[in-house]
Image (cartoon, rainbow, N blue to C red; front, side, top):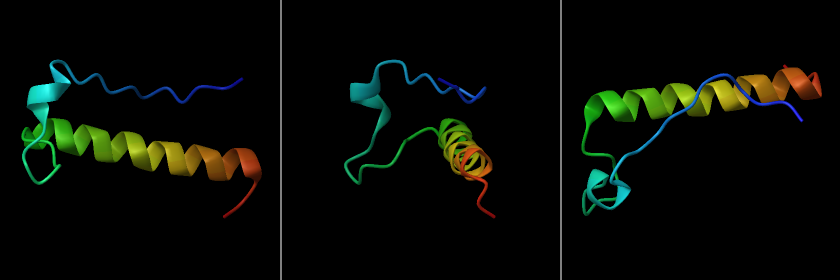
Length: 50
């Protein structure tokens, strides 16, 4: 098993999202986007896909 180094914790998740389903906190949203991009990048590296 291999884990990506980035992690995102969402405290009180039931309050963290607006009615549109997006994170209310812009900084947290940016961190989550970075996490998701890291997941994609590292998956490509592991699969040797560019």
